[in-house]
Every structure is written in structure tokens, then in C-alpha cells.
Amino acid sequence: MSWIGRLLKPLVRPTGQNGKPAPNSLPTVKFDPASVSEGVRADLRHNIGLIGDVDKKHFESIYQAAVESISAGGDLHALSCALMDIDGMPKQRAIQIARSLSNKAMSLINRERQASLGITHAIWISSNAPCMKDPRHPDAADTQQDSAHRSADGKRFELSKGLLVDGKRTWPGVEDGCKCMSRAVLRGLEE
Image 1: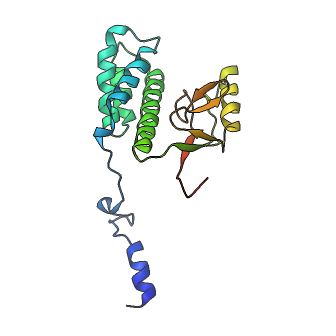
Image 2 (image 1 turned 180 degrees about the vertical axis):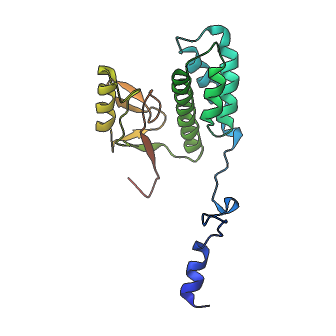
Image 3 (image 1 turned 120 degrees about the vertical axis):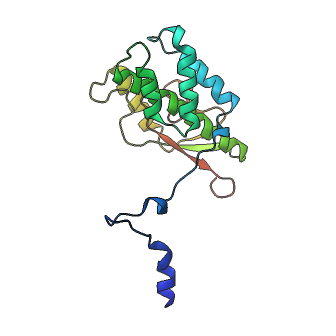
């Protein structure tokens, strides 16, 4: 086999009957349930407590469903289905709550993981998608948040503090409707 054949061979994946890659040949990322630390659990409890339109008697069942969902790597379908079972919660509201809780937890998990690796700073990256709860019907707060998040693009911030955006410290993906991300700053590679 020629050197070019040996070079390209790893790029060829086994295919199934329909010509698509066989399911067992697709790369997967395993989520470590141990990433759901006590800090993440405490933050989750706090965020569930902030949900105003859900009866407090459902707090524990929402918390358990959220922990299971996040421990499974952010299974939004399972969490939103569990939320819809609570006193007939509307589907759209269940999806909003599931997305919000999951995004906030995953953001904290990523910050904790980065801190454990010695990463102290990151750069805010706007997704260029509207950072709004409902982009089809934005209100003034949504428009303000979107504008502030777009202007934060490329700014460096300390992971432990967050970035001062629109008068308050926050992290990418934490505010409801936010679709932003961050890129870690590695010492010695970027300064």
C-alpha cells in the first residue's frame, strides 16, 4: 500500500446498509456523571428555587429529574418530559425550564473542569444567534441582552469572576436564552 493509502486509511469508516456510517463507528463522547459536583447540585437547587411559576411542592421531583438529566450528559428530552408530568405544565414552558437548568449546570461544570486544569481565563464567544428567550417575539430585555452579548464577543475574562456584561457579572450560556460560549486561554499559548 502506498504512503498516501496508509495516510487516508484511518479516514475511511465502515458503512451500514444505507451507505451511512455504521452506528458503532461514530465517535462518541462519554459524560462523566462525577462532574455533577456538590457545587453544581447547590447551583441547581438555587436555580430551581428561582422558577416562579412552579409550585414549591414539586421542588424535589424537579431537582431529582434535573440531576438525572445532567448526569446523563444533559438529556433535555428526559427532563422536559419529567417537567410536563408536573401538574400539566405546558410543553413550551417545560422545554424552556429544561434548557435553562441544563445550560446553567453545564456552564458551571465546564468552569469547574477548566479550573481543575489550572485554566484561569477565557474569551467570550458570541454564537451570532439571538441571545433571547423567544427570538420570534423579543421584548426590550431580550434585545438588550442580545446586544450586550454580541458586544462581549472576543473579550477576555477571569473564569472565577465572569465578565461584566450590561452591568452584571455573568458567564456564557448562563442567562436564559444565551447561546454564547467561551474559549479557554491557555498559559504560554495565548497571552
